[in-house]
Amino acid sequence: MSTKTDWILQELESLKEAGLYTNIRTLGSPQGAWLVVDGKKVLNFCSNNYLGLANHPRLVQAAHEALDRYGVGPGAVRTIAGTMDLHLDLEKRLAAFKGVEAAITFQSGFNANLATIPALVGKEDVIFSDELNHASIIDGCRLSRARIVRYAHNDVADLERVIKENKGTYRRALIVTDGVFSMDGDIAPLDEIYQVASAHDILLMVDDAHGEGVLGRGGRGIVDHFDLHGKVDIEVGTLSKAFGVVGGVVAGKAEIIAWLRQRGRPFLFSSAMTVPDTAACIAAVDLLEESTDLVDKLWDNARFFKAEMKNLGFDTGHSVTPITPIMLGEAPLAQEFSRKLYENGVFATAIGYPTVPKGKARIRVMISAAHEKEDLEKGLEAFARVGRELGVIS
Ligand SMILES: *Cc1c(COP(=O)(O)O)cnc(C)c1O
Image 1: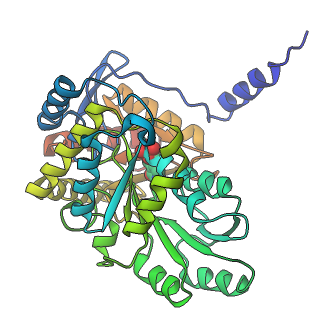
Image 2: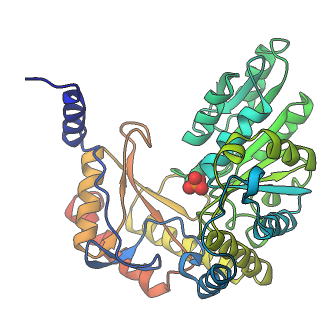
């Protein structure tokens, strides 16, 4: 007898057969260099906690103090009764940190994209979008109902070509790109993209989720990295990666931020970041403004690990950031590699289709400032052992 949901069971089964079923591990410890995963202590090579802030004592303390003063929740959507002075404080601090006129926060980076893109373009408009953009950009583009024109990944000549092809067919246009592409660790050529955007007078938006707290002076992001202050119209970021908490941010010109407070649907129809999240993020900005030590350590660790992996003979792709993909090809091999790493005390998830193209499965190692040299050495030993066992390296 078949039921309405049999197809789901079949789909789940075929994911398992293809090595594409995601087994979600359970953590029994805070985020850090080491984790307790399904009851076992393992080295953490998976999280986006670039600076080790997710369990930083200063952030934890700030959250505690705010809880004592404000309680837990924001109480309503922000336009009705859910904007606390904490939220405005965080936005001012983020704007100052990034060197922009204004900033607005959202519940997540995903929501920041869903809010921003449909507020800026609509049915009569066009979006020029890098073909490898993050899912939240793609969904934001779709929600806007603007025509979506994809250009080849990081290919500025192709961007120019599609703009010329579509000239005169739209009311407004938007160019949107990830800053750092999270699966390969490459960076958008934002300086060249800016030249094109400026030549054609098109709004330019970058989603710097993996660049915030990582790229630029003291982690000020990709716009700072390319010294494009005042030139990129919209910078989207997340507070869930290097900032170690949760939340999204859009930074840019005052009128754009003011417009998002009026027309960003996740801002208008979903409640704000919670009290402890907001307070912890303010403490994260404090830390980043006080010192570049954590950002420097992140990059030192990443350079060391990447060089050693190359020496071992692994293909680490073409990352220019702390994101270190270990290219393995087929998804079942990547899954087996990940399983064996776990047996060897290392937590590093396999990533396959649809997150990356078919045949480009990998283990993505996320290095952080929370790691010590000896942690990285332990990780390298495990990779060498498993790599030899599976014939990936000799
Ligand atoms: C992680 C990520 C997001 C989502 O951020 P959250 O705050 O976790 O919702 C959005 N865009 C890009 C490019 C990302 O890498």
